[in-house]
Structures are given as structure tokens and as C-alpha cells.
Image (cartoon, rainbow over all chains, first blue to last red; front, side, top):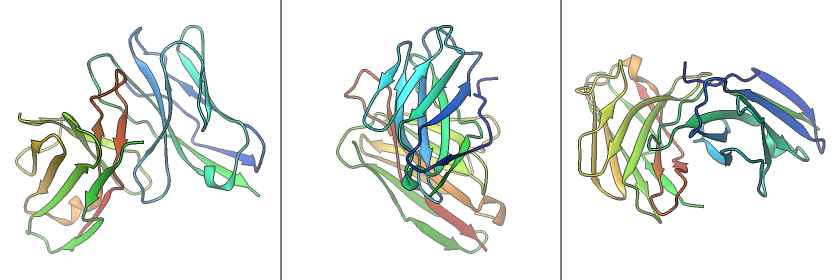
Amino acid sequence: DAKTTQPNSMESNEEEPVHLPCNHSTISGTDYIHWYRQLPSQGPEYVIHGLTSNVNNRMASLAIAEDRKSSTLILHRATLRDAAVYYCTKSGAGSYQLTFGKGTKLSVIP
Amino acid sequence: GAVVSQHPSRVICKSGTSVKIECRSLDFQATTMFWYRQFPKQSLMLMATSNEGSKATYEQGVEKDKFLINHASLTLSTLTVTSAHPEDSSFYICSARDIRGDYNEQFFGPGTRLTVL
């Protein structure tokens, strides 16, 4: 199964950090890990990606387990605008297809 | 970031008609574009991979004669739903891969809501 596994939903209080987990136990050595998020009736928005090392950008941080079978998306201070469905996906070198699992619906409580 | 547009944003049509959806990469060239379908409260399902100048590659279970894909230029791919029926009603989303980078980042369009009456 090429899909990833994520919790169906999570809640966070506004301005608190959020850790969104993802399992990708079938990942191969050349697969990238990608995170996208989607608001209702909109296309997915790129959040972050990584291969082996932890990654930071202006939106989030990505922590990748040493065995690469799991990763965690970290939103350092959740805002109401971060409420969305977050998808963890993976793709292999030379194959740019993304396979989306069910994602995690993040609710942010004011 | 790169921008991908889709047109129309929503369309309502009668059963049996054909509908064309356009996907454009506005500020970059995309040799590869992807088409997804998303039903309510479900995840995105990849329908096909579209490569400029060649035939699209369809995922298993997607009828290529029903969902016609044309990728005639590096900035435009079209999806035509032929003889649409109510079960084809869905949210159709395209994405485009930016060839400039060494990373296979995909940029998604805003989606097209198709309703077949």
C-alpha cells in the first residue's frame, strides 16, 4: 500500500504548537515526504517537504524519524487560518505522482 | 510560489453533455500535469498524469474514453468529461510540476466543481 496513515482529526488551541503525525512505513530510500493542506472547496496548498533531514520553512517544520517510517509536521503557533485538512504524501524519484491518504482534519480553538 | 489556474471554477450541466476544464500554469512551464478527483469528505484521487506532447497515463479504473486529457503546451492541460452523468459530479483539481527545480514540487489549481443534473 503506497498510502500514508494519519489520525482522522486533531484539535489545538490557538497560539499553541501542533504536532501532526504521519506513518509511512513502506517508504523507500528515494521517496520524498510531502505535506499539503486543503481548505474546503480549494485546491491543496504546499506546506513543506523533506527527504532525510528535518526541514524548516516559514510555514512549518518537518521532523523525519531516523528510519524514515514516520514524520511529524509541526506548526509552531496555530492560528485560526491553520484550520484545514493536512495531507502527508510521498513520491519516489522519477515518479512525481502523489498518493493522498485521508489526511488529518485540524481544528483550531480560539 | 508558482500559480496554477483552473477554468471554470464551477459548472453545472445536463446529463449527456460534455464539459471541458482547463488547467494553466501561469508563471512557469509544466511538462507534467496531474488531474485529481475529490468526492465530498473524501481525499484526492489521482485520475491521470498528463505529459506535454504525449498521451496521458490513466490510473486503474479511470475510463480514458470518458475523461479525455490533452496537454498541448507547456502551460495548458485540458480535461474533457464526455457524456457526463450525475455520478461524475465531483471536485476536479489539477496540479502542475515545475520543471525548473530539482525537487518535484507540485502546485495545485483551485479546483473545478462539476455538477451534472
